[in-house]
Length: 144
Image (cartoon, rainbow, N blue to C red; front, top):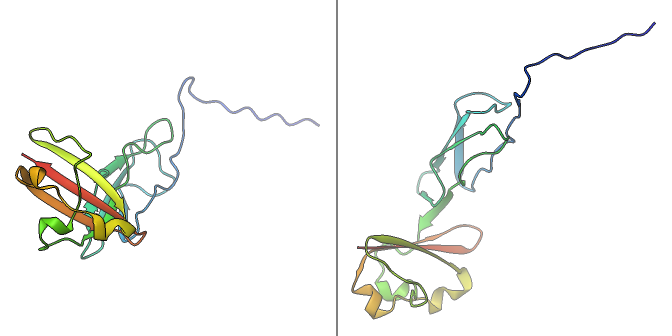
């Protein structure tokens, strides 16, 4: 006896699932639907109390290709809050444009060496430095 199973489905329709997305250290992800993550499933990121989202996007959507769009944020602490600008970062190697945001990251071992060069500090509206448990500093400059 031969048993034949035939699977019928819509032609040209992909039914891919997205893998579980990256969850940043000290972060959380809430989904609008349970796993398996079908296309158009939304993943919303948040950070633990005392941490801020840095970079990435707040929401990512599962695409029909089985990949999450955008990048996951990093959850970090503002380690430069209230410190003078000279203790933050040397941005001399970066170009500043009007109303632009410049992203710089430095290894934690360079903390004692980083500073903002005076010529750039005059135009700086905001400078924030974040540290992750992985030992990386993320520096955000909003020049306006």
